[in-house]
Length: 80
Image (cartoon, rainbow, N blue to C red; front, side):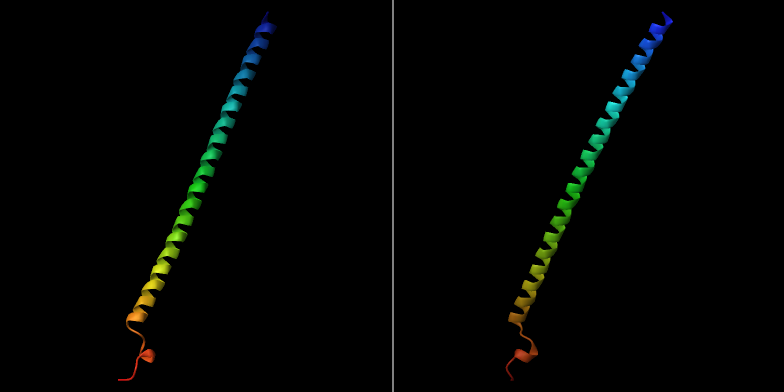
């Protein structure tokens, strides 16, 4: 009688431990997915800032070219 009760209790404990192990693996997997999503987000932000930097550099070059065309340097001016 006591042997079957102890055997039943051990099987219940074994089942509970397997459920806990499964829940921990699910939590670990969700954490990994969130980490991967955060990494992708960071990469997208980095690409965005790189594109913005290139855009700003192009605007700067454009402004320098326009400034040079509007008021040429002293070497390019005709003597007065």
